[in-house]
Length: 329
Image (tube, rainbow, N blue to C red; front, side, top):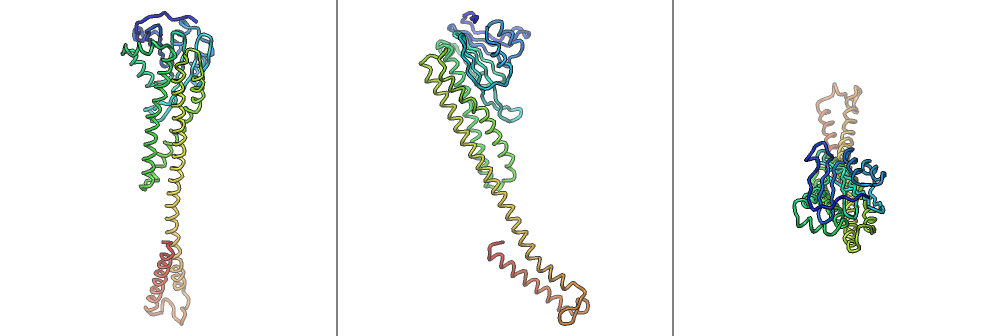
């Protein structure tokens, strides 16, 4: 492996000097070099191949944009692929950001395939703060890798708290009578949790492998990577809890909607049953046949009409009273 030249100068992106050159940001201090290449393309690959001698399969993994989290150990370097959840404001949904990392004895290269705020924030802090840069870089590439992964994993907790707050609001909305309106909100929250789980599930094995890796990670750093692994498990436990909560909220909302439909059907059924005998009586007395007692609707006196109306009202009141007594209304 060709080693980069040691320098204590903090470099800026080469693209800022010449737009035709690859977009490469570099920070060097204490014999350690941090190279950050966001959205690597053909020009960035050519630059990497010119300055480093990585395996061709690793280059394919970097530019395939579809790799599972993993840790590959070589004689001269370590290749790490990790995924982290990021919130895409343009579409309002969570997406997975892939971070590829090459770790050597005196260098560390990060290649995020999309914007990764924790990584960018740490890079800018290290670039602008000399004391922080000297402190981190003096502890070697293993510690720098720990700081990067730790910041990216910790960034999941604020997103999880937002999901938790959203679930609490959904629970309140369900019992406030907005069940029909929050069906879409429940679906969106469920989709967020599913996406989060898809990102974190394969990540757990990679973090465990990273904890067991000995190359470029001294023994005194094992406890740090163990802490990252514990944080990853906490993220997974929270997602498992949220999964159960969203399923329970969905079932509760469906139960409330079903109960309301049953109430409506019960009222409509009661009205139908009440009106049925009235309709029957009106049909019988509306036929052009003789009435019991010898009269008919056309020749009978007005008393017959009021008798029929009275009977109908009596039946109506009796049935309403009976239904209310049985708590059907």
